[in-house]
Length: 208
Image (cartoon, rainbow, N blue to C red):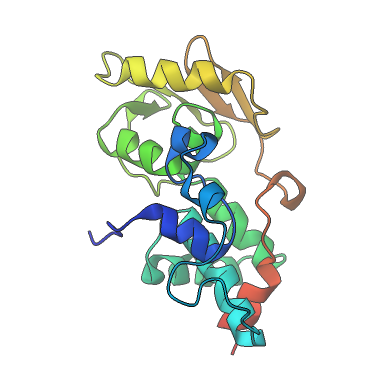
């Protein structure tokens, strides 16, 4: 499957916020966004007056890049959200939050979403006792996930879990960092999704 392979620090600079795509590096003084907090390119430091369309596009790109999706995938999620009952923008964020790779990251079992995606793809986690290697797999309330027995990345997962034990775990997840086990206790509400994004702008963009 196609994926972005360029410098990820440029993505954060383009979106004018940290997307935490490089895990531990994003928390250090080596973070590219901290050193150059302006858009990349020759005119990055200049003042640019954004049109309404540009603002909508930037919000969409911010969310798409945060979750590591391609345009076709992201549009698919939007279409699913639009068909569901409730507010489309909130439905969209909820669908993205309950992806397996994002849940692994939110649980603190990986330092970044890209790393969580790789761990899932390599079969290092199971859901309800069954090995699942699909990052986009949507978890349901009551699903229990944990590190697969004999996972080769066990040390890395434990290291991430140890670092995350001091972090705030989302209220809709119940995590046992010692045994590397998690449970989805509820679906995330908009108030529990802390990413700074104006999802209504995305809805307006796709509604044109």
